[in-house]
Length: 517
Image (tube, rainbow, N blue to C red; front, side, top):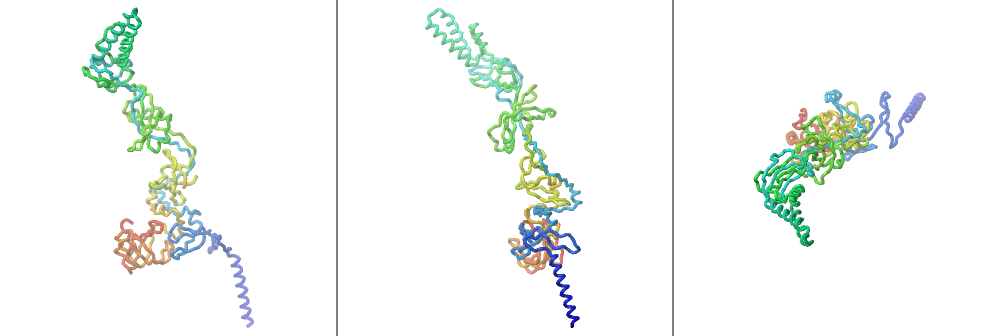
């Protein structure tokens, strides 16, 4: 009896000591406790980061809780999410595939973006240096001195001679009035004044018809009216248009010749709408012509037109260019390069790093060891090789600049991007987008393509057995789904909370993916 009591007392003391030791070694409990008990063998303790939604929805919790279906939230530990929630959608690719794809990365860094605006243009005649010769009286072309379009002419060079009865009559009238003034010099002032007014009126009529002062002086000296009148070139240039034909009759204001001075020309460039705000008057430009690939011409923007072409969404910009040797010919195509100068340094990545879906822009941030994180970014100014990042990437982070589209195809990037904001999966999550399960069909809606399944545990998602609704990837899958049938099936998450069956077989057979999976 005493021996038994002694043994009981000894056991009690041992248990008390062991319990005290266990209590002393147990970590303090509390809502902010983030360290779990040490694993067997004295391994390093892991830090608890958060709890994620068991269905993969974008919802996390700092404390344990259950979702609407009664499922426990899954703990996520340090090392499983790279300490950052943003890495929850990291794409994992094996090292050998990274090498085969030729993946190349470059760090996002601060740099100045030397932006240049390039526009297509054409050589045009300077409108201020183009002249039209159109007589202001009716007459006939008596003789042509310049009879070829494109012929160069000098200022004052005779172009053609005309005969006009009106012109001959006006000359005679002026000659008679001029002789009358001379004859009445010694007469009364009233008669002399009237004759002077008549002479001045006749002279004004001739000047209004663009008769040169030289011809008027010759008429005054000789007193004889000339039958023809010679028209001369008002400027040195090229005859760009000739409608005069010898012997033809012309009417007042009819254009017979057009002469253009090509010592200076215009370049009319079509600048796209998104770039026009950066092009200002006085901006220096470089012009290149296909006919002279080894040369370039320097000019300045002289005018930005106030209208936009609605069809091409471009605004015309005028550039003035000197044209020595008349190398630049109207109608030639030109390439206009407008350097806008360097701005302040901004965070930038190579243009090839951006995957543009049209609605948003994505870059792949290298996380190391074959992991890549899709990151949505906001873009700013662009240069020929780099683009500004205003949000989404930090300086020094490595982004994929080559083979990013191959990574997209290899890892089903669209599925990862669709889950932005989701926490990291647990260590048991599979490396592929698909999952497998077995279950019993409860009901099926033929029209909507929805099926209710009571399935067993899904290890790849840490799901317990439950009944839930799935959608079918295509109608061909309905033939193997009957109420009460036991099946094995594969499914994926098309978007957060939407689970789609891609393959199904009666239980015991291996699911075979259907076309389009």
